Length: 434
Image (cartoon, rainbow, N blue to C red):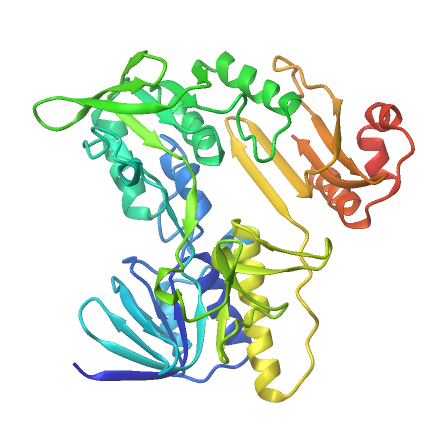
């Protein structure tokens, strides 16, 4: 097959690829120099929509409504935009081999692509129960959510199993957002997870208590401290029940699994330096191989604020790292200096009529402030994390844009604090004074 050559190749077609393409255009990339190679069939879109408005019965999000870069208030990049800018979009194409030494990528169909500069934006994939050999995990109507075709399958099942029963396996981001979306669709929902409380990587027990009670009030049944060990099926191969380790069996028409993700780095194993499960980069997202950059979920990069290296799986970092890497590519070509990537960790979620934001680091001691009663009309509450006498992290539920900016500033400035009790009493006022 004919070989195609490009000056710049982005491998991966998710959020990072879309934001990188916009930055390439801003930097003056010439027609025909840039290609995005994606295994998905559509142009880059804002992935967070899939677990939220894409699943809603009303006010539903559909493409082309949420192509990048609308998620950050930017221009919507429709497929025509790429054509206008002279950027090639090669879709429904999986790269199965990457030879960084010869700067060559090979697709499943045997096509080869040569590059001068490569941007790795392959993102993450979901961890599947079939990976662990869970009995019956290959039944139909067991769903994972990462890509738009998976969301379409889930939407079809919600319509087909009207007022049915769903079991959500996992108590993290996907578990919480999908349980809410299923309840909004009038599906009976049970959440199952092994940890003592939901979102344990971020939430304290105090924060989690609010969300668990709030979800229970919305009709979500929560089962903690156990895992799914098997699935029953009917003659059509459809899931009928979920068997738990503690012996319970839950009826299920739909199962949604959200037990984590893993970065897609297999193509580059043994060719590039890795750390903390990702591809190790410098503060400009350059890897150990010249002319190869890695951004988003796959990059393990220097976190300047904390003086360590980290890998961050979040849309905010996917957007910002992609833009920074492209700026660095052009600065390098032009011999211009560029500042190092400075990132403040940021996570957020929306479910039911709730909306929280978190900034910084959730280490050290924590204090809860505000009204965290699940029946509160405002449910405005938050938490600070304190390490070495400084506030290093801040969380806020139902904050206004100004209040969210204030807690972000706290996490950036890391002000000293004398008394945890005083911090709990002052609450948001502490942040607004910074």
